[in-house]
Length: 424
Image (cartoon, rainbow, N blue to C red; front, side):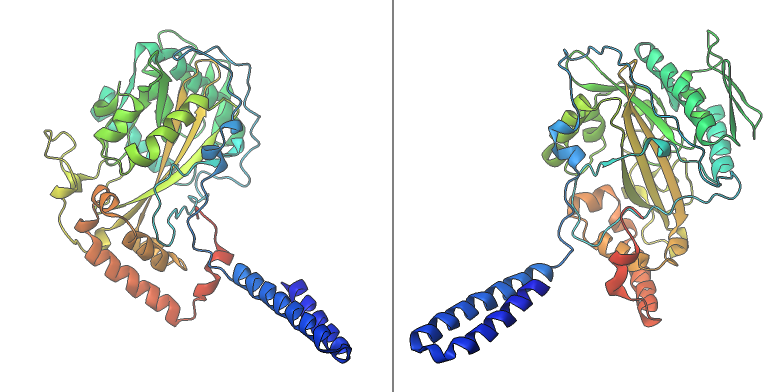
């Protein structure tokens, strides 16, 4: 931009110097100056163009070359000689004082339906924080109350589930040595006193149930069959809020999404998702984030949408009370990671939920205005999926008021992109 301005000034001085050269020379000079001025105008338009254009689809979704995929028949997986890099201890981590990461994965409108995959640093595979004991207790209660309905491993997936246990017993003591200690048969939990023996047979409990006790995340493993589809054959889904493992176990990936009426799945997600699952390799872990609004404070199952064991057709946003007070509104966000296990070939989902009152996150700069813009930008299908008509009046009024208050006390709205970056 500065160079363009210097060029125009230079041409102007040259035009003055040739003014004595006659009419033809002057005409050439004027034409040259006009060209330089046009170039300056175009450059200024380029540098001043708005930055709220749709986010570029991450390379992990676009480039088939991101993963080097050896040829193989559908449903067949040859073990790969891959070992995850050793994880350094999480810096200054303490189970009592390390607060949850402030994921706020929403943007100013318009809203775009994408897989939203990003590369993941191996060190950050599993995130634990000061909410660990609450999650641990909630999970233990769910296991006691619902058992196999929340944690189950199909026989064909047993080796993959055990492989996940092995990965946890290696990674968690590396990353969180003050919480976990590796042993000859697995690992010990230094806070709760739990002893995890993953070597004995039979295991003391379902391997996915055991894995669920180790982390704050819900867990699922997909396996490819001969038809090329990926099936949910192992999972520990204890705190999902809006869906149940017992309804989805054994389903192929596509049916899991279509049965849940995921917006835009057939048109915008299915092909890319199937291609991704087919080509993802053990050395290519990824992550993504999403968010929901919930109108009750129940982490494990949102009772606002109906009874967890309600009959078919009785559970959904249509049962929720409309426009409850803002104190009942909660921000529910998930951080999901995906990686392929090298021995079994299963694709592991970890689903970590972050759950906060709306009134709490709206004390943070920029959050009310950006969230209001995001909610208003949802299309009809996304709005229906997220239950917008049940809470939009109260929520948007509150968000607008909080944004106004922040602006009135001097919030520099134009600097938002300088002080934050997605997904925070």
